[in-house]
Length: 233
Image (spheres, rainbow, N blue to C red):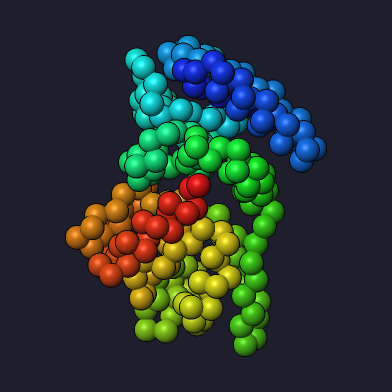
């Protein structure tokens, strides 16, 4: 696995690099890490080198972490982004870049192990599934492929990029099964995969990265923000 770490503070950069390398070693994963203390150097490097995971400081001179993420989006880069910042209030602004996590620098030591463990688990998602037991059959679902689930007159529409699966099942029961995969209840009739959330409009809509719009209950807006924040730290 190839990892890039970008932070304008050399001392913090070295500390993060050693800490991250040590945790991957404990997990028996071989990684190569390249450090950048200038965001412009990282952008230049991305023109000819791919990294599986990029740890990005948000507050940097010249190009901020968000500026780098925008350039990556424009180039269709598919690296996993993990923001690291003292600007804790920017966690919600970071949602538009669909980061894997947002780590607070003040809690880096406490949080980095669980973030890497979650990352390794996420990378194994293609082989993970949940099984729904129905009256006369069992259905295997792959949570990472599901965008959202809509409950319509006791029938669930399980929506992915490729298909819509319709079945009779209780939304609250499938919510329990999918909670550990980052699914959030946004409305009494909708369960959404948090990794597909692009924007939340407080007046009553959630926009997915695919452009689809889903209703969000006004009373759930705060709860959804809090859950997104929890999933990202």
